[in-house]
Image 1 (cartoon, rainbow, N blue to C red):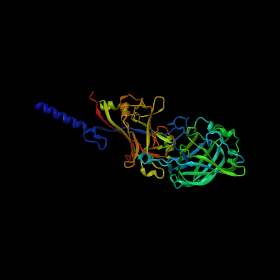
Image 2 (cartoon, rainbow, N blue to C red):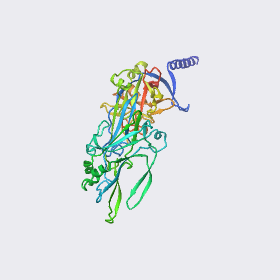
Image 3 (tube, helix red, strand yellow):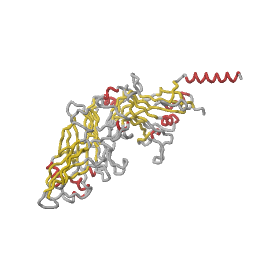
Image 4 (cartoon, helix red, strand yellow):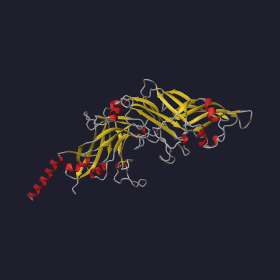
Length: 493
């Protein structure tokens, strides 16, 4: 009996001495002591991060993709100049549809009164934390923007690819407007109703750009019935619109976001024609030519350009290497290539097979004060490349389900990636991905970190949100850094 007690005491002392070699931590916060999981914390695994250019993304798709919509949930327009990230511009190209989809009749002796391009801001409904993170404007809201509308030189409706780096030529100016964005303020609009009094109603937040009436008369109202019979014929004649926005001199500028899904975006034309009931009466007619991403979608595309000039971002892109900070920027700007160069040797260095209870990738913002007026992204995406260099979700963000039978049954959401304003950092749960890398079940063909929209995680850099971040690298001297926390136990087998 004395010997058995001594053996037990020796075992307990050995466990205590071994566990003191590394930090012992509890996994999870506010977990009941009866159900918590404990393990050894390893937080010294090297993580490298390098600033690299992101790739252009599609801004319009064939009908039936993107969740049943043919385009993006919101589109960017604007110009901004950031001392760290340089200049960014975003413009829009859009085709115009017929009021009823097919067969529009102008009427006899039509004479235009006015024409207005209506662009509604994208305003996210709802009150949840995730939804409230998105705003229809990014940047300095006191900036005045000079909006310009021109006619496209080529038929947008007939094109097949709509990448974010495609430039759409437009030479004939149709209208202009100077505004200070008010993306959350409804406006009053007077609508003309045939054979009834005009009505005034509260419209959704929008900008209304008055176009040259004579040009719209000749380019649309003067078209014959055959041209106005289908959207295809209309767009062959009237090739579409391009909208640009230039920030006032001396202002940082920003990016406005507009939506084309709800049917509120239109080219409104007000004109007079002979009444259909009597030849002596003149009717004032309102016709709404939709710019819509509905079932009979008319293409809407965005062009985004970045000019990094002589900024710190440009320096890292030109000369890759080890830096104290790295950079992230939305809208096909810059992303980070993340690597774990010594992870594959972890088992050998520890002398045992590991069972990971939890692994977290933590990304610290280097200096949160640098975010005004260009705010830190409310959410980041983390994804990997497969052997074909295609973007894929990490296994921890790919749960198996009836609609996703090829998903990973180990995945337990939430995956993370939201900005913690208290800690000034982002955290991703990457348990299964790190376990697979350590065990050699997965090859790291490239792991990337980039901004994404708060309301929809996406591995592609769609231009649906603004945001840029300066993050601390693994060697950051201020201890604001990217790091991998691994909580593990030794596998007894």
